[in-house]
Image (cartoon, rainbow, N blue to C red; front, side, top):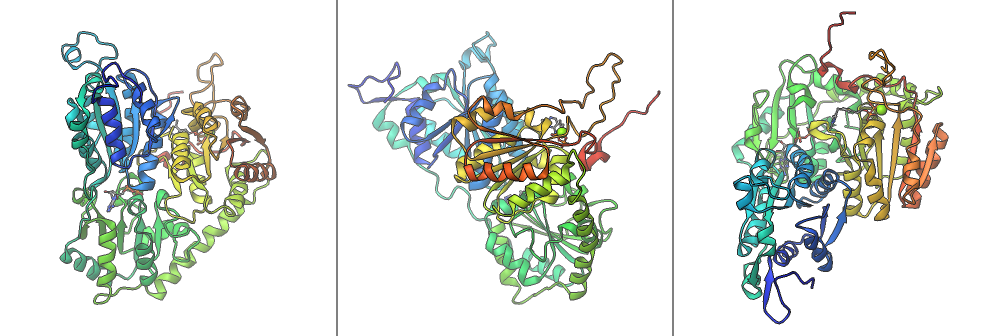
Length: 571
Ligand code: ADP
Ligand code: TPW
Ligand code: MG
């Protein structure tokens, strides 16, 4: 054991740090992501000594995104460990993002002396962390006494995974970490909460209402969201979709819940189905900006909604919900399946044909875009090369961020397995890429491909050192179009400064990974890109492929330019 200043070998005393690790182990926590320093360095060392994997990062935000990825993939909270004040704040963005997206994670942070903080007397890394975390977390707790450690962790775990999952903050003061307690007393406090994410059974009346609405529908549609992917109700959801023949569209992180080449997938007829569906089942998806709030020209004005969600507060948030079903997705989908015996519904042949017909011209248009042979490559010709490789590696995890890089990859690259895509999510946040890739690789032990815009990669590019240090099977593909969005790189400064969206179009990002012993590639043609990606995946070693994309390509703000306010030009 690591000897802290307190326990001495000939006594039966232990300390807060040891009890924290014991409590984590008792709860089956096998991995911690973080950055160490005062007061948590020995905590990480001791966790490692006790068989918990410690993945040390270069920045807390990325470590937090890795923890969130673990939470999304496993339904168990991922753990982020940070130091006080600045380290805590660096991790807080990831915690807030997890809460926004419904990913369970716990940020455990050391904090300085409470007495000094509360009187603002200027302690080392002084900050009132527990209170600052509150608006960004689902719950925020502080443990002050060693005998409360097990209870504090149990509360954090329950808060993270019960109901709508989210990020939880757990404050461990320096005094607590160094506090001394009799080991027998501490051992007796240890426990793991029973059934931390209990089933939430929907009411029979709500199921009946939903089924009756669907039975009367002429043009029904299912929208699968990341809540459905998270729930791990894969077989039941597939059965519901296939038994009823209803077309579905996946939100980005629900791609692969059913394979994207499934005949009922209406992704390429998205506009048509939204305009024409009379009853839409929201299955673990929110009517937020990503679905234009269920309003406006994209939607059938008379559409009615069935919504399956664990959080009843979500209903009616943007549009009235005709048939709210409050419950966990596993229980709710099972109840709908059982109810089909008495109240069946099925998509008509006419509706199925109309949806299939609507896909044809869009699929044709996409084929033309993908076969573009212009040089330098555009997003589509590059992604066509990526698609060819990814279709042969259906178990590879896909991480994706950027603007055009995000939109175009989402549309071009098929997913075939549930929970194999991690991206910018509900906030459209940049900088998740390397953290998600590391979290996915560590959690799954499988290969990961991260398709990154050149700007997006810049937020956390230093984590390629972490990828190399842990020898992870991650291939990073950077689609470099020389900046944020596109080449609207006009010099308005009048003295030659780069424009606000400009980054270096001729950068050789692959040289960065060379410095850490990873494998670099630079690709200017689809053939070079295919070859490099295939080699990167096959090697199972850290690889970075810098792809030269025509800087003229890409639209400002990708597909959401309508949300971007513009100045009225006075020139
Ligand atoms: P997307 O971005 O894919 O549309 P959202 O994150 O907006 O998905 O919505 C996911 C929804 O799923 C949230 O409202 C959340 O409460 C819900 N949810 C998450 N987990 C479960 C679950 N196990 N059972 C039911 N609903 C869930
Ligand atoms: C944390 C604003 C949205 S998209 C983007 C930024 C900076 C980068 C787009 O350029 P990229 O992709 O990655 O090169 P591409 O293919 O279009 O050229 N800070 C944060 N999050 C967001 N969303 C932004 C800034 C933004
Ligand atoms: Mg770019």
